[in-house]
Amino acid sequence: MTYKIASWNVNSVKARLGHVQQFLSEKKPDALFLQELKGEILPEISGEYTATFVGQKAYNGVAILTRGEQALVSKKLEGNDTDEQARYLEVDWNGIRLINIYLPNGNPLGTDKFDYKIKWMERLLHRLNELRNTRVPFLVGGDFNVIPEDRDCYDPALWRNDALYHPETVKQFRKLLNLGLTDAFRTFNQESEVYTFWDYQAGAWPRNKGIRIDHFLTSPAITDKTLSCTIDKTPRGWDTPSDHTPIILEISE
Image (cartoon, rainbow, N blue to C red; front, side, top):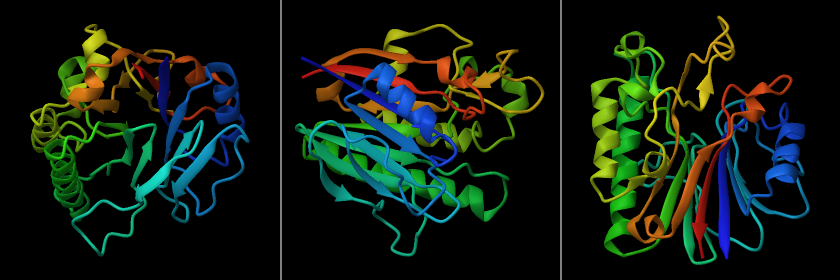
């Protein structure tokens, strides 16, 4: 038996509800991570799935939809009791810890927003290290707002001074990998010019001027069971699309 787990920044679940329903109908994932819900309420999406979410008025928000029951672990990333942004969700499902994140963008550099991004990544590192030390099988999916390498960006020179590709951001991302986590997409795909995000402006989508910022990171126990990881570009071409497209992970039971 295999599980198909997808992640998608929908850039407003209310605006893209029909797209999410179409994706579920066509791809039939066993679990779906959604980011950037942009609301305090999660609309009814599908009676075939159990849903847990954490929302925020007009901004942020993450949800996990699963076939079968899930058990909530946390709706908040540990390490800052004053952080009210809805960016983290952790559940247990079929013996796997599912973690959905919407990592802060961090722009512009030199502001509190970039400091928040780096500190958020440090908190994430701490949490994942706890899970590694206790040998909990887990995977982290979502919009990381991190460009890992030059090949994950259509023009690296344009992004050198952006929070998504700043050296400190990349350093923090590599610290996650150094825990023993695996960038699932890169396990199966080594080519360049394969992206998950294309801006709405300047013809970025038809000209394939994109970046790869949506990822799945897997713990060793899940890495051993990983069968594939692909990017589904089709929804980016739908009418009134999100600027992101889904990434899909397949693992064995």
